[in-house]
Image (tube, rainbow, N blue to C red; front, top):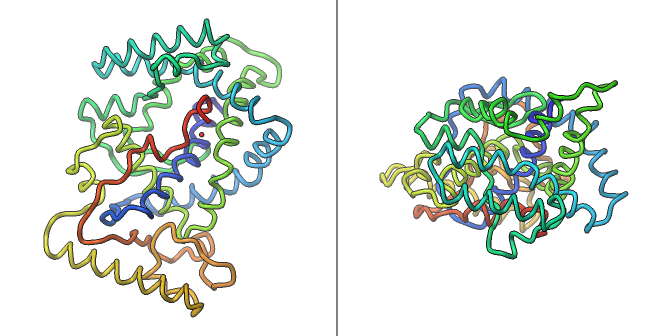
Length: 333
């Protein structure tokens, strides 16, 4: 497994947390166009199996043998090491000021911060703002393309998948793996260590994904919204949010949204009174399924369609991704 593919599996788990903000913020229904859904669901199930069988146990072992402070230092090191990827893409995006800030951050943390194990740059008002080649393509108008789930890589899109080979050319972990050849492919051990740190930081989110009504749809919608905020550097226009959600100010759309809200209220009332789980058509994406309720995640009911999240007739702007996605390890996901 390469560094790029390994890290993408862990990032797929990290991005799931963005949907938590949607539960606390009334938004229009997420977009449901997913032409490759049959293929994607099979790949999603495969990745979930691989994660539970191999990747998650290793991440749990890592947490057990390390303390919180040690994990912060290690995560700081890897985050700093990959800063050249951000610098190059900010230059390609035509953003010289952020590129200079990232360069200064990299130099300060590499020297004063002892190879990046410490993060004095953040104390000097030089925060991290990572980006990648997928954001660069979006910046120059390349269309997103269909949503795609790849084995051992996780959620992406036809546009975002290009960041895997391109960013690896500017990643020191990729340089090391290409320039060395050891027995048993030991040159990939640093990349594997990076993957483990990412997966370990996502462990608290596992229960959220596992208990969601449809984990696949949960991850898909969260990934799309997270990427939207990355593409617009944390401040997407309302038109982009509405396009992502497939919403419009039409009366027909308002009626549909009001119907979804009524279904959500009916579910909450039924759940609170202990009358059992609602029918599949009224369960929103990401709704935790109570034990013994009879409702099951998608892996146990493959014929169920993806159900959009509830909403009101007045869409509100979701919280920025920077306030949703776990903060960098230097500030702690």
